[in-house]
Image (cartoon, rainbow, N blue to C red; front, top):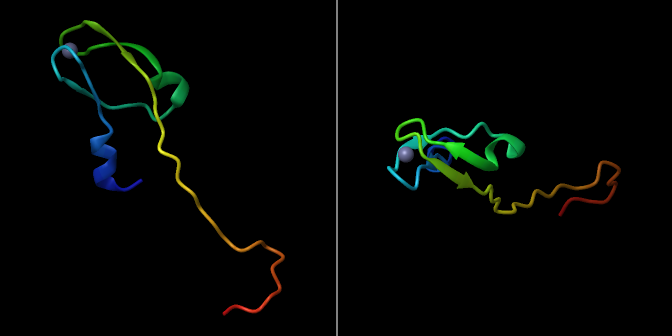
Length: 65
Ligand SMILES: [Zn+2]
């Protein structure tokens, strides 16, 4: 995750649009929050976009092309 993506991932209050920084922990971020600005509750559902990382197996002995 790069620097700019991090700031796009701030949690925005649906009542007043106040931005909250997620903890980065799924268990802590998912669920009910209370807005730090308007003090109204809102629900957060943590969603992930799958990403795929590939590498050659550690025991790979074949030729690199
Ligand atoms: Zn709010």
